[in-house]
Length: 374
Image (cartoon, one colour):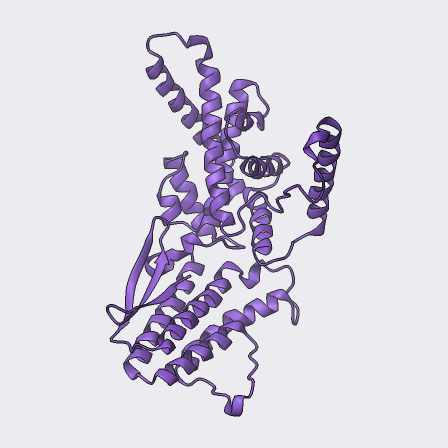
């Protein structure tokens, strides 16, 4: 989302947003008055951006229910409220005598708040600049929905979404074909959910190739590498297990991302998984009490992750894990291939050849299974 702030030195209202490799700042309006109302305006504009971009990250199409007053119905109402944003900025509802006005959508509520603040500041040029900026942001969200995260819409690469554009998945697949270990463009040009779906496809190809050459189970081609964090290991295991059971990359990835997005908002999606996690934790605690009673472990002293992904950035977190998994498969492949010839003088050249062989076979395997990706 776009974050708004006031530059008191230049007396300017500015906006910033992420691009995947750093933030961009732009001036929305200059010569703004030095008053607390301008700070309130910046805060309300940030909240408006958040509410609008949430329509992108939580589309109605991804909801499980679509009947009246359902989650899908409410999400669609929020998205439809885009049409009321600019009118609300220009002619906001101003409750008389402190009366409370109820709005059916968060988008409309915040838009009217921005409009009331602009009315209080009473500066026509500022109101015009804000309306122009908000119009551009609404257009950027529409572009992101269409799979075109360019210009202001580039901030979509920082957001985790409950759905993914097939166009973006195909573009991510093309990038990974060129750079199976990942490339910066995956983080700056592709929405991370789509990139994670494509990366899961390539990870499965990498585990298949590595397992075939090493004789290891696909899971072991990743677990053999040291220093992999437990949450990352768990997310990779879930993806590989799901795809090994016949799930498509999308179906292997989306439940984890959606669950983490729900956790970020303070609730669990699916009680069964939570029960399983608690059950496993209780078994481990019981075993630890038997083996190491001196540790004093108990239900109130154990940290239990609700999700293997960072709820603040689940899609990006998963994408990073998947790319790490691909590199881990390559390391396992190279270590086993290099084992008989560790003392040969041309080992660096041999290692380079191992990399070429690995990447060539991974590309072939990914191409063979591409129909499951798209």
